[in-house]
Image (cartoon, rainbow, N blue to C red; front, side, top):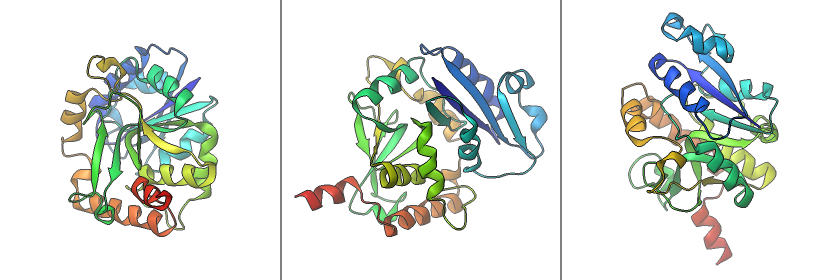
Amino acid sequence: MITVILNGYKRPHTLKEQYEALKAQTVDDLQIMFWGNIIDNVEDFPADVVNKCVSSIANTNLGTWGRFSFALFAKTPYVCVMDDDTIPGKKWFENCLQTMETHRGVLSARGCIMSENDHLYPFGDSYTPVGWCDPNPEPVRVDMGCHSWFFEKDWLRAYWAEMPAQLPQNFGEDTHISYAVKKHFGYNTYIPPHPLDDMDMWGSIPEKGLNYGQDGNSISESMGGTQGMNSYWNYVKQNGYRTIREENEIQN
């Protein structure tokens, strides 16, 4: 039913924990693949986990987009690409499948609703966060998602049809899937419910997400990464992507 794409780069210590969180899911029909942007630390990744997955290890850093190309080899209706700092609750995929029934679209563990200052993203007051960082009891539409992306495998055709002439190294892949799927298939991006009384449904366990996400290895913690995120957001806007706020203004 679902293929999960895990990825490895600078956090070998999270791979086993991610794998165990996937094996504990209430949806048990999972295929697990591992994409490694590994240069010189391959021995630090748990070999037992790597060998249990369908794995591809690059001997150079192919950036954040490579895992979405690896997803093309999935043989299931759904794919979920996960960041390596994301440990989902055991009902996360059950939550995603249920949300797909009422809110068909790209589903993420965390998302951004852009403000009128969206051109500043991810700086300043450019967005309001939603998801495990700011729980939502019901599904919420967002302008772009991050940390994990659950979607229909067929939508990868849109993802690569909109491939920019120069592929970025370490940014833009999160914005790109919302933009491409909306443009080619007309589907939006949503955050499934993150109810306070059932954290098993959450896309990321908060203490894990905060601990791993602020360990100095995140692209969003580097100036080059955040500037790249800003550049790519404005690129999709220049190519016609409208925010929820802009759509509402047109309708009104």
